[in-house]
Image (cartoon, rainbow, N blue to C red; front, side, top):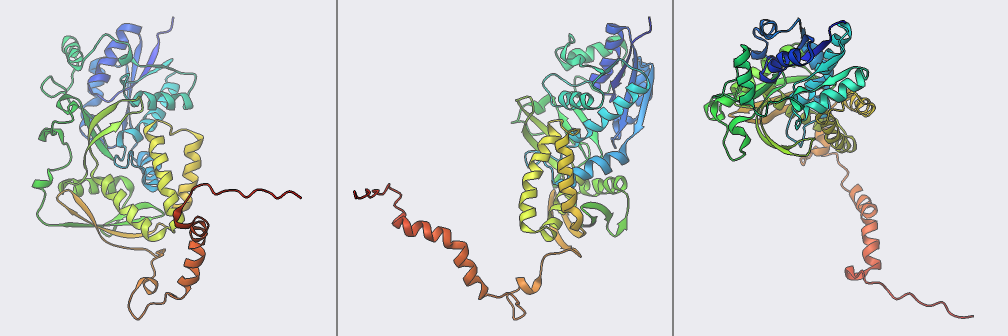
Length: 413
């Protein structure tokens, strides 16, 4: 009988390290690990050697950074998608791409199952499994954390120690960290108490605002159809731009988020996020849209942004709705071209200036000087028509009296 083959989403962290050995023991299967490079740094160091030492039969490490930036991050940025108006969703938006890579390897290696390291009360289990169902409904999905015997991270650490599995997590440093080029998420340990201020060692890529430079740093970002294409006068691709902007913004203490959020599964969780570049780019993109989108599109797009953020967070990337929203957003971004200057100072972000060849701002209409070209007399007719429904209502219902009026009886003939 041919041995079963299982493709495992492998980050090299505690959970996925345990999974490789645990699946081998439970299913007597060959384990093929799949790691996607989304711009994380520490997690990739020595990950292939770690996977083989843990028991993997074959190891895939794929550079997905370019696709991640162009097809995933820029779409979220163009839409203005921030979950609960705050979180740029670095982890959330990476899951559908990792699921896609998993499916491709699983099909190539003729795996009968795909396994992930998501917990039974987290969001990622939904994101992975819904994406896999869309891309490969015939492949079985295994979720060891929903069924195995371990009930705490401490028990998993003990399992690793027993089997000689190399992991960086210790009992003294129990944080769960997920990182990519768009941001870092940190949870567990003392962070589970929302009253506890995050210890200094929690943060991975930003300095404390109090320790940031005492001088303002100004950066200029050039956009083409809603997509960042240049930084400080230099044209560059998305990956390079994000790496440089993460470094600049992080050095100024920008991008720290302490968020109690509503998970898809119905519970609240406290997460610490770092998203230096994402924070700056969302701010700059929003400022450029203020200049280039007309009022109705701008206001309607704000509603779409919330829906799109929910879609990403809730694992519905590969859906007809997402494709339809993309078409709308792409149309709105055709005029979002120009330059935005952003000022960074001790964790704060402010606008220094903005310009666009598609700017709808007309100085001669906005000014209060003698150059004013606005027709003030036209306002009389505008206000008359605009206020007519209100005037009519209160003329009929005098003094705001909304009591039911006596209905006159029809006279008998």
